[in-house]
Structure formats: structure tokens, C-alpha cells
Amino acid sequence: MPRRSCPRNRSRGFTLLEAVVALAVFTGAAMSLYGLFNTNLIALGRVQDASLRLPAARQAVEHLSSVNPRQESAGSFELDGFDVVWTARLLQPVRQSQNVTGARGDFEVGLYEVEFELSERGLPVGTWRLRVVGYERVRETRS
Image (cartoon, rainbow, N blue to C red; front, side):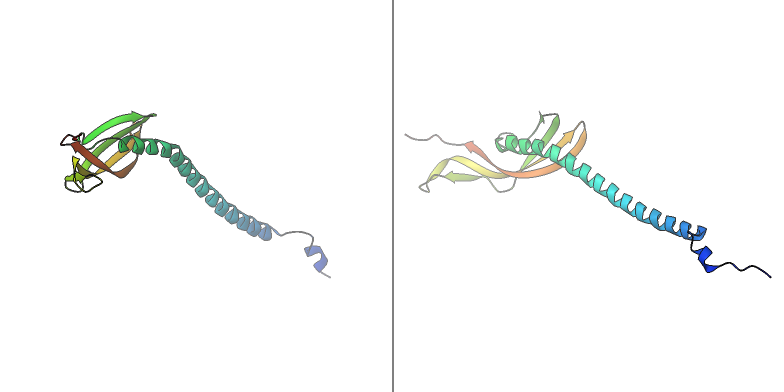
């Protein structure tokens, strides 16, 4: 008489098929988590690069705020290892200034847009724009 296997013997462990399916599910979940982790690491690197370059951009804005674009319409300078190249263009026509009483002032003024590019070791970092008033003294103050 042939021997029949008892159902109790089948429940002793995993079959090969169950182990392969479990391994496939685990591998899929691990790959998804790795992709998410890798994306976050790339984003963190970009944020870190931007945070290192932001102070240089702020210093460039501070420097360019003191430039008179009416006297100098373009230029370049170096700032903490970064190269800054800038140009200015007139946005509003040049006008005669007014003093506090509304009388003609001593200056002609114009609104300029200053665009500058920040680069590090020849690689562009970014481009920014700011508006600056350009001025030129056209008459002397009477005492």
C-alpha cells in the first residue's frame, strides 16, 4: 500500500516557491526605498551647493548696489573665489531730480536694471537681476 504524506509534514517550513516570492517582494521594496533615498541625497547635495553660493550672491548684490550705472554700464570683479560679470541697462528715461520742496534738484537720475552672472571656476552658478538708481550731478548747490 502506498504511503501518503501527512499534512503535518508539509507545514514544517517554506517551500522553494514561497522563498523565491518572498525574496522578490523584499527586493522590490528595497529597490523602491533605495530610489527614494538616492533622490533625497541628490536633493540634499543641491541644497548644500546653493547654500554655499548664496552668501557670494548676496555680497555681489551688496557690491553692485553701490555701483553708479550712469557712470559705468558694465564690468566684472572677483568675490571670494567667484567671478561676477555684470551689465546695466536703462529702464526709465533719465529725469531731473527734485529736492524735498519739489524744486529742481542737482542730479539727473535714471532707473537701471543690473543683471549679473556668478560663476565658479568658469562654471556658471546663476544669474540675478536688481534695480539700481543711476545718477549724475548736473548743477551745483547754491548756498
